[in-house]
Amino acid sequence: MTSSATILSGRSKFDDFLFAPVGEDRNGMIVSLLSALARLDIDPWEEAAELARLPTEAAT
Image 1 (cartoon, helix red, strand yellow):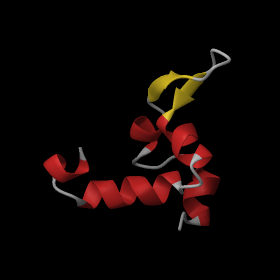
Image 2: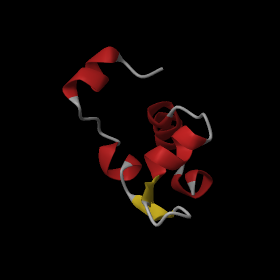
Image 3: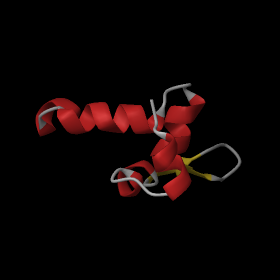
Image 4: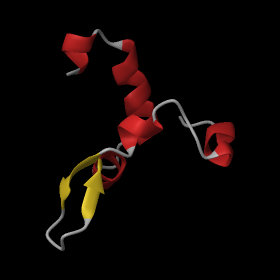
């Protein structure tokens, strides 16, 4: 789970990854990885932390 300190600080080591654009929605709005994961009801920071623990090939 995301720590309150991370939320309050507004920064995490995963921000560049999570805020990267991955496409556009049907209304032309930019979709970031964070918003895509949130739309799937997946905690973005938790998912990023899990991916960071994996070897690069497995995370990709």
